[in-house]
Image (tube, rainbow, N blue to C red):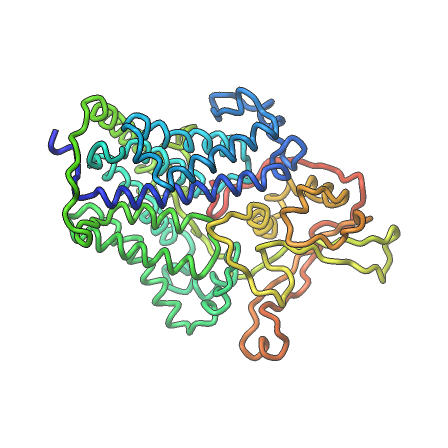
Length: 485
């Protein structure tokens, strides 16, 4: 069928596939390096406990068949190895069916990880990676031209990501409608980057322009994805520029990078690279499979599409257990004040008024006021992100904060690897406490005078001093927040 393929998109497919493989690689490496402390057999929220109280139907995956920390590590590192092979172009050197199977491997492996990740994997970009990865299985390789149906499904996904994020803002916090949200956002976002301080200090008219440009890109430009070329390429290019602006201004794991990957697939690179090389026609079995998948995705799109037009729009929600078609969005509301939970320990057996408390340092979240935030995205620091939610409400931390503190009190090696430094290298602390501080960016004058990027003020206790044994009080999480399902 001549209509089935888009010959001019051979380079678009190639760029998309290699870029997606890079995102997969980062996701699998992050899972392999962090899982033991978070969800391992002796972690804060152990996978075996989850499996014992949930059903296969609710969260299917490989770990329903078997779980051990060694097996999880095997799954994660296998996913990283396959992603690296795809990044190197392994799918181009095998037959079409084998290439599809190769792309299915990281999708199955990462789906299995997300299904047992619990609150640590409760972010919209997990579903976005799975939905994108599922569609990538059916893009084929050099044995056939890119299937136009899958290319349109990728644009439909990009449309939902951008348009959903734009609608949740307009319907949510009034500061988005007043163009004032960026007066706060660069300071209060979950994990600032090294340039966030400078973005925050831009003149307020520049912040108004940022918000207005964001509304244009998310509420108007997405419709242009479905117009003829070169207009669709121009629309996708605007989205790339917007996402790279967000990359510079903060740390949002691979959310922005994966959105860029989707936008790159919508660009007709033949406008730059010239005519496509000759490609063979598609086999009948492949056309049947792609058409069937298209029908499936369109059928599953009903609920996400209905959510988009609903006044009660929700964001970052999966409507099926395999995360095939989801709804997205971020920052429907903006915090006006940055609160941070500061965790401290002491080696003194008896606490008194003069007790010396030493602060634990986290890799990404603000702590030491003199420390400029670092760039970590697309790598995802899961503990640091959940600490931001904990500061918003202790209810977010109820399932895992007690186990976290318990592991600090015994200098658990895997837990300490999640932190920037351990202030008690010679032995575990006698007590741990946590306090909430109000953080605000200093201005230019304060920065020059003190060398501090942040000014912080004590607000309240988050957890009074505790020693072993630590009472564990697991409980339900509250309603989902920005960036989370």
